[in-house]
Image (spheres, one colour):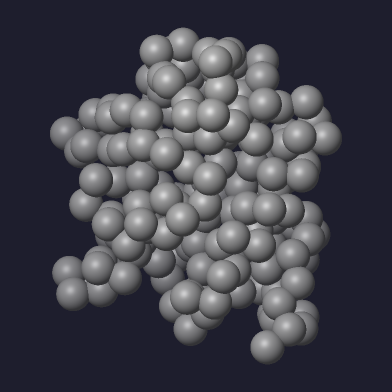
Length: 184
């Protein structure tokens, strides 16, 4: 298998939207949820905005998009209520490996991230994160935050294999989310 990572192209929007739809919590049967899911859907225009802000990273097997992850500035993400809560509390998070407190200007947001079911467990998430981490560092970011539903244990376990650590919790629409963060 030859997986490559790159920044999203316009032609990647349809496959990204398809992967997103196939993995949205609301589109899955209850027995499928244990394999991981996305909590929130984004439009093609929102993916374009993510890409214009910092970048949408795609993983391809040959020419087929098999996964994506978004990286964007904290300032860009204040428009989304749940992430707005996280950004408002940045200074309260203790990020292992640093004495500094994260600040909005130096923090990027990671997510959503999704891998097509047939391609999970092949280190694609780590490869996408590594590519996105370079984008973020080159843009001057020192910290990265994200959130995962408390119920989405597969995703949480996968992300804790990356440099992320649990740093807090947030409640949104009566659901609990774990806030994860790392130093870049």
